[in-house]
Image 1 (cartoon, rainbow, N blue to C red):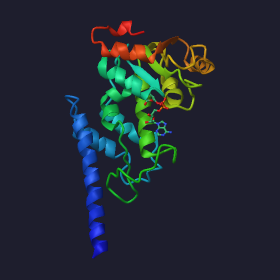
Image 2 (image 1 turned 180 degrees about the vertical axis):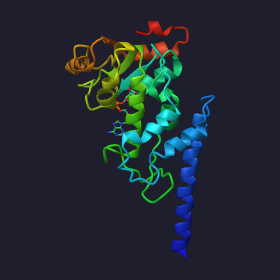
Image 3 (image 1 turned 90 degrees about the vertical axis):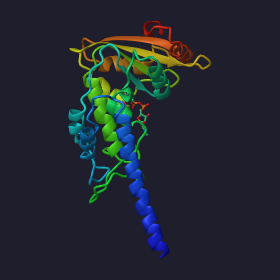
Image 4 (image 1 turned 90 degrees about the horizontal axis):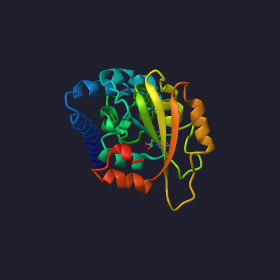
Length: 250
Ligand code: APR
């Protein structure tokens, strides 16, 4: 009897967690007016349902991108690497910049975990592979695919916040280095402006850092490159003051 009760409890638990996942997805999606969230959900699910969660290539999300295409926000697009918190705190307050996580697909799935299972039609939120467990895992392939799509439409003057407190602010193995930079299109993008976020107290990297030379090498001809060291406190001060125009932040 105990086993039956535990079995039912587990079943109900799993069912509830996948229901909560869809609810979160739909609630976040509906904040974006005029989007057909049921259609987007269906396109999302088909990428991983019934599949081994380590065998979901990034192309599996192509129909999702087609269902919710990225609209370019020229001169306002912000990329980031190892600066998740400072970049998002900034764009949450200053709407003149947009990160992937401020767009529909990025915000809907931000900080969530999901996967399917062979022979099952359900979405699971636990027992899924972690980021480095396998290359083609459900979550990692999603972020690779949406990052590629976001970078492909990047236009005008764009910004990237890099971490000036670490030895290699630009890494060829990050999503920014391996996926996004490679898709920047010089016919659309005028410049990439590095904001190197520094910490005043620590001895930090500056714009002469060798890894930033790698970044410049990666950029296709025609895309201008700039770099500026900006302290984290200056960024926070600027974003918490509604009067300060974005152009005066650095
Ligand atoms: N384990 C778990 N999560 C990871 C790992 C890992 N080893 N590596 C990356 N991630 C996830 C985390 O959610 C992390 O916050 O990717 C996020 C970004 O990782 P970073 O190394 O900080 O940066 P990067 O890989 O360059 O990705 C950020 O990609 O999502 C796009 O447009 C976005 O420009 C941004 C870039």
